[in-house]
Amino acid sequence: NLLGGEQSGHIAGVGFDLYVRLVGEAVAEFKGEAPPDQVLDVKVDLPVDANLPHDYVPGERLRLELYRKLAAVASTADLAAVREEIADRYGPTPEPVRNLVAVAAFRLHARRHGISEVTLQGSAVRFAAVDLPESKVMRLQRLYPRSVYKTTMRTISAPRPALRDTALLDWAQGLLDGVLGEPATL
Image (cartoon, rainbow, N blue to C red):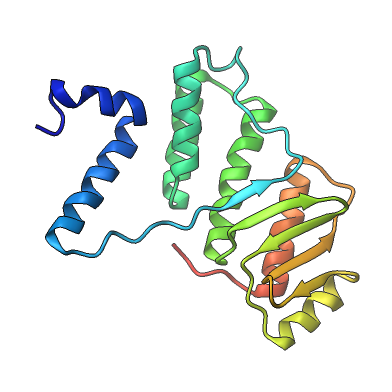
């Protein structure tokens, strides 16, 4: 009785999607099957005014559902569908919502490059989980002077430009494409 009344407390405690995933993983483990491939989670912590304003999306539950949908996009088609849904349900999107969609698009792009983290650290932007051969390290230093690649940490630290919001996301995407080349498609 996975979804019946006896289990409702567990579902309420962890959320339906997570509960279904956990049950699926437990069943696969019991059957001796390999768990499904996990999608690389990409952490983006940059100064971008990206949110769903209270006056645009009324209700905490609705905002949380949209945040969840944007965090779960796995392809550009998924992102386009969520973007359409937002515009259809709530009307023309204000700048913070457009920025939020841009962050989701950037996360997809970074995932295609195999990047797991893009964060601001002091006066530098840090890109984590990057494997660069020597030729690409040279390209990084030529295109982005004063940038540093740490082989043991697999990170790129590039001086932060004086940009914010989508301009900063565009710069970060340009760095990834310029140094790593075209990303794999999802």
